[in-house]
Amino acid sequence: MSSTFADLGLIPPIQRAVDKAGYVTPTTIQARAMPEALLNRDIVGASQTGTGKTAAFALPVLNNIAPGIHPQCLILEPTRELAAQVEEQMRRFAYYRPLNVVLLHGGVGYGPQTDALENNPDIVIATPGRLLDHMSRGTITLKEIRYLILDEVDRMLDMGFLPDVRRIVDKCPKDRQTLFFSATMPPAIQTLAEWALRDPLEIEVGHRQSPAETVAHAFYPVAMEQRDELLLTLLKSTDFHSLMIFTRTKKEADMLHSMLSASLKEARTAVMHSDIRQSDRTRALQGFRSGEFDVIIATDVAARGLDISGVTHVINYRVPENPEDYVHRIGRTGRAQKEGDAFTLLSADEADYAKAVERFIGRPIERRRLESFPYVYTALLEDKPLRPVRPPRRPSPDKKRRRQRQRDRAEAS
Ligand code: AMP
Image 1 (tube, helix red, strand yellow):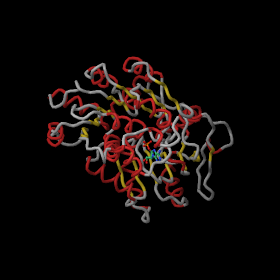
Image 2 (cartoon, protein in one colour):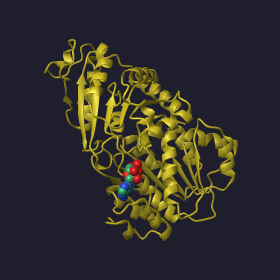
Image 3 (cartoon, rainbow, N blue to C red):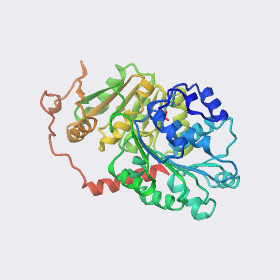
Image 4 (cartoon, protein in one colour):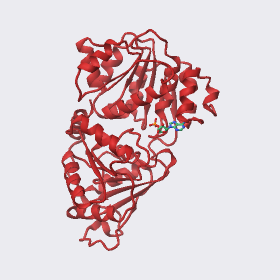
């Protein structure tokens, strides 16, 4: 393990970029992955969000890449926003080493991407769908790829990208270095890893599914018909600076956006989901990052991997159906050892999902009541073990997975 970046023996232009970024000490995942990645070893790395995975793969690749082979490095990302974020980081670390970086994702025209591909890129960062489109148009070939990086692999597989990922990996030369990174590492990934990687070094930092230790969690039980009222009261009594609210559906996100814009006059609010034009999505995210907006309401398209510093609160308007999404959503706060709060509104029909989240993160989540809120009766407010009032209507796992995949794919590439 390396105790400083200087111990890694990076080439001067990359070390200068690290210095410029102000990085001194590698994070745990970086300290464990970078020395091996620099030696061209394949790696499967699991570490929770916000722990510096991007630099863990970016620096070794930027260090080792050879000039004159195009494109030499391919980085796959599950969503447009993540792809754009990684592109930004790659450019930052390549600042003193002129390498040509190209970003390919859906939701924008082909023209500029095709022009950029004609310009001999060294590094391509792409979402799978758009990359396959370019491959079938003949605007890119992967036969010179020496470095293949799959970031947020668990998400890519969740989103039904497995067949696309396989087609892409198949088109890359066998003689390459492959790096897999993810926040969670379910068994499906191990299987894919066995197929795509050569004798990989497995690195797992922290507990498999643990959210940041610096996040305080709370459930706010409430009757279904009082959710909006409770949310508003909660917001009015909470001192937040930068708040993300996650909804299950786009409709919910739009509805909350209208409600909060009207009722929470002191906060500036943005909304982000897949039916919103890409330029507006980018504007919403940039505005939230820069502090122009205090609140962003989003579907899970915004949940994974996005590095937004200083998020003080995450609120789940509904309990996520998939407990992994809970970890990813709340991973937006408590980043880089900062403190954060994760609040989740909980109605009776979500009791099973709540239990699943608690099982997944391996600890109970405190139930909180808002003093002075005019609660109507809900069984969840009683100090009894959680039990659903009526069994939640759940689609069969297959149907659910299919539906989620459709939703996610539409949102992603
Ligand atoms: P990531 O998990 O790659 O999204 O990184 C999370 C945040 O931590 C980003 O803002 C990085 O710029 C920052 N970061 C990553 N590695 C380091 C480091 N070694 N020292 C300081 N900040 C870091």
